[in-house]
Length: 249
Image (cartoon, rainbow, N blue to C red):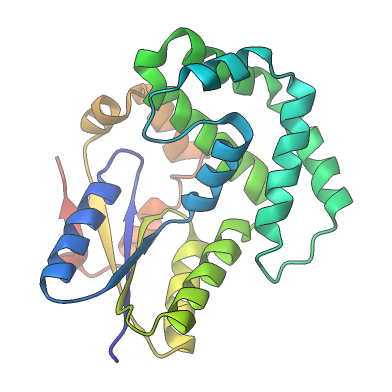
């Protein structure tokens, strides 16, 4: 069976997820069976299991009441437990006490922005997406990658490998959120190891359009591009053939 990993590189709000779903529709029309995943799936699971927040929103009344009464100490402990459960799925060997120590320290460092975003969701639910994205960024980059640089990669690749072994009908794996060098390398190395074709696309959109789509300020998006998780994207884009660059304004 010919199998393939399809990936999408792009900044926040460029339209990676939308275009990946369009690609899946196209592949399914051609009779392919697809697995759709992202590095952020495990991040979203941890946030859902810790704070009760889902990407789709809106926030249920039960979740709002929970967020209003849960203590910051409890949130730290729940984060630790949920991170440990995700790490157990990988070949990473991180001692639970190390996870707890690091996460407690990180929660303390990022206590103010974390609380501000939670309070924003409670008081301003119309802008849920903006606060949720900020929490995703914090938990994924500041927390997860501080525990281990390849944490989300290890979790995702273990899941992909398991699905490909268990379900021989899966032809295509689609990953919609490549933003780091090690993520790109993980896909190409996995493809080489298992003799699977890899095909990676770059998605571009103006910063004004991305700001409108995400609800994030242009200043915040510029910060991500210079100091945050977006700073490697120009280098990643340079690795792609011109025909794999998609402009999505």
